[in-house]
Image 1 (cartoon, rainbow, N blue to C red):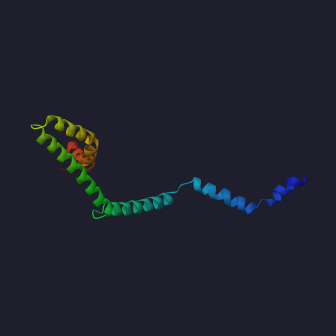
Image 2 (cartoon, rainbow, N blue to C red):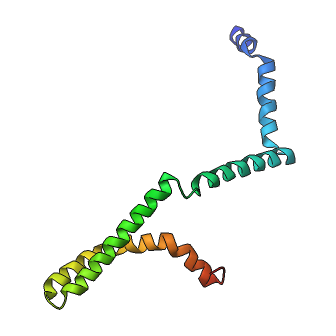
Image 3 (spheres, one colour):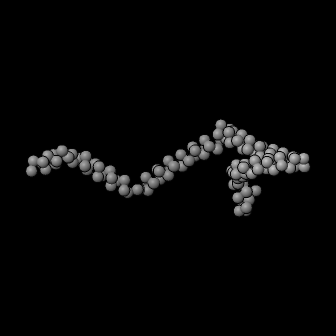
Length: 127
């Protein structure tokens, strides 16, 4: 019986009680705790929106440069292919094969910038 008494003498009853009480407290989510959590979440979302919607941020500038680059290259290649067609149709076909490889990048870029506006118009929202 020495080992059994040895186990119970090492247990701190106050620590056990505190652990059980804090666990039971975390099981019940009161209205005050919910309101406090909502307040913290709203503040975090407001800070996120403030940081990400700033149009002069380096991230926004980089997105615009990438979008302009992709659209410019795509349109240049389309116009080049159309321009070469009467003179060298084989070269025009090659250019259009390159353009077809850029279709996904072009559609994704245009969709990213104008997709939400088009969806709003389609749904009958603001124009």
